[in-house]
Image 1: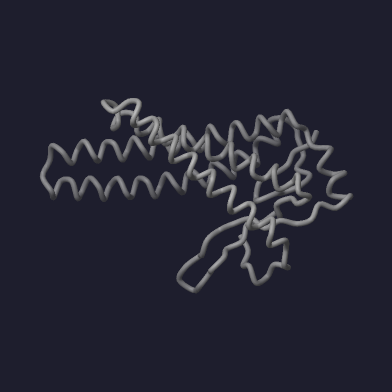
Image 2: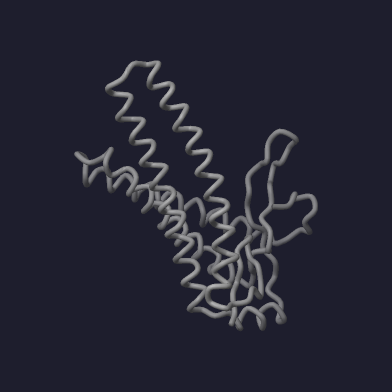
Length: 203
């Protein structure tokens, strides 16, 4: 990720469009969760890990569509994400920036392998949805444990769960980087471009 001050100015209109699309994305994800819980009221706790996994898939799928919508307007995401509102003690909000699609960029982009690119994104969604479901499973265990144990025991268990989640987040970051690296090796692909810190592959 890069600091916004180091970046040239890009299209404010496209940036606002992307933010609006992402807000709509989050609203739809939230409505999906509410619909699940209303449809299965007796399974709210048990359903939680699967619900947030589904939310993750829906969110990532729609986010990918949002990038494609921006591309229809003639802009592609920059290779790096940017921190907005960054301070010494706060990293800010991480968002992509968008650059005008040039003829050279378009020519390179058209050489991508659509099939393998779609397969990579499927693996990416499945990996992150699975890890998010595991977070939900830990939260479910803490919730159930809190109903049958003393306050001190719950505190210790909750602290252990928080540490476990921190470790899993670290593992998630490593696994995502590993997926990008080894996916190309598995299928003998080359990275021709980077957009929003994700590779675009070609044979």
